[in-house]
Structures are given as structure tokens and as C-alpha cells.
Amino acid sequence: MAGINIGQPSPLGSSITKLGVNFSIVATNADFIEILIFEEKNSTHPKCIYRLDEKFRSGPYWHAEIEGLTENTFYAYRVYQKKNHINKDYSDKILIDPCSRGIVGWDNYKRENSVNCGNNSNNALKKCCLRKR
Image (cartoon, rainbow, N blue to C red; front, side, top):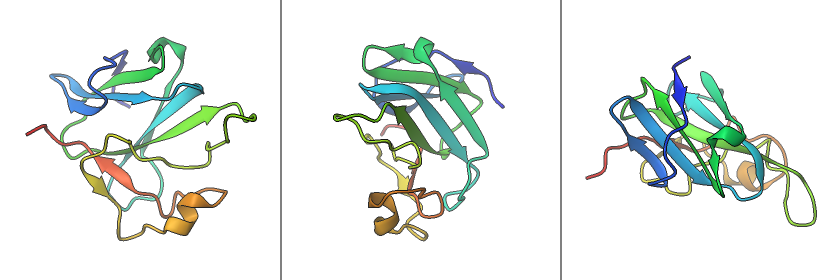
């Protein structure tokens, strides 16, 4: 597993850094976040999982810089939050970055598995890290 640093809350999404890739996502009610790194765009299970606890949080922003990652890294998130009248439990779901520019995994994607309850790992979309143009 590569080294992980606190990273920066800005910009949102993924951004290439000198050391790797910075990830930033807004998840106001999250207890913790996982960044899932995939080998290929159609991989169904992550090759690495990085768990972000409170030290990776600045207000509603969760952020981390993962060393050694490069452009064309495939990733997604899992968000863990308390289920209550405001929040639903999406911890079974692989979620794409809402600031995605390079979405991949369309070959296996099934919308019904993404919106229904339960795990969607066999059919989830992923994000590909890209350099800003």
C-alpha cells in the first residue's frame, strides 16, 4: 500500500500532485470515508482501500493525498454514516466521485443495481484520475 498524507480540501475531485493524487469529497454527515483503488476499469473488487478517519476531515470536506498514484488510476468511494431520518446507509454502495470527469466501467454498469439496496460492486462505475486541461 502506498503512503497516505492528509492532503488538501481544494480542489474537489481528484488532482495529480507531485507525490501522487489528492482526493477531496464533500460528505457532511459521514463518520468515515473509504477511497477504493481498482486495478482496471471493470474490476469488481478494489486492490487497495484507504480509510479516512477524522484527521482527514476539514468541516464537510474529506481529503487525502495517496503517494505513488498516477494519471489513469481508477477509484471510487464508500461513505459510512449513521442511518437516521436524514441519512440512508450507503456503505454497501461503491460511489463515483461527484466531481468526475473521466467515468469508466460502462461495460459492466447496471443502473438498477446502483439505485436498489445492496452491494453494487459487480456493476459500479469508477472514476479515472485525469490531468486538468
